[in-house]
Length: 258
Image (cartoon, rainbow, N blue to C red):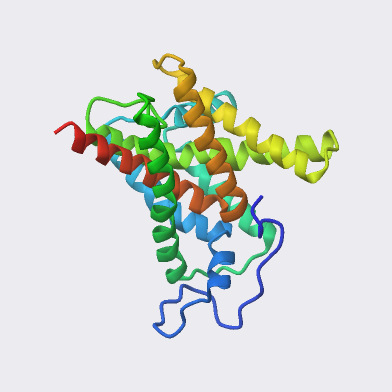
C-alpha cells in the first residue's frame, strides 16, 4: 500500500544482518524507503507487542480491535490470547517474503522510525488539544480507571487498530474499488481513505461511549491522518505514531488531573 509496498528495494552489496557501524548511516532516501518495508515494520512494532502482552497479563487493558481479532480467529477455530499478536507477525513476514526483500535490518532505521513516530504524533496532539478546547473527547480510545491501564491500552490500540483499519481494511478496500469495481486510481484512493477513516471513528463507539458528532469528527480526521501516513510511510511508522499519540494524551491527562 505504501510507495515501496509492491516492489523490492535495491539489493544491498553487504552481507545480511543488522548494521550499526558509525560510518554507515543510510541516506535520507534510503531511510525513507527502508522504514516503509514490512521487515523493519515488524522489528519496530514487535517490542511494543511484547510489552503489551506482558503488561496486559497483569493489568487487563485490551483494545476493542484486539478483542475483535480474537473473536474473528475464534470463529475460524483458532482461539488463544496470543493469536492476534501472531497474526501481526505472520502478515508482515508473509508480506516481506512475497516482496522478496533481503533479510537485513538497519538499527539506524529503527531508531529513525522511533524519532519519526514521536514527531508525527505531535501535529495530531496539537489538533486533539485544539478540539478539546471545544469540549471534544480527545483520546482515540475510551479511558480506563488509571494512567497505567491507559498506557497499556495505548500500546495495544496503536498496533491492532492500525492492523485492522489500515493494513487489512485499506488493502481490501483498494482491491474492491480498483480490481472489482474498476475505479481509477485517485477516486479509489480517496474513497479508500474516507471509508476507512469513518469506520475507524465509528469503531470507537462499540464500547460504552455515547456517540457525539464532535468526537466523531475528530476521530475521522485522525483516521484520515493515519491513512495518509500509511500510504506514504508504511505500517510501522503509522502504528508507532498512533502509539506515541495515545501515550502523549495519557501523559497530558495525567498532568492535568494532578
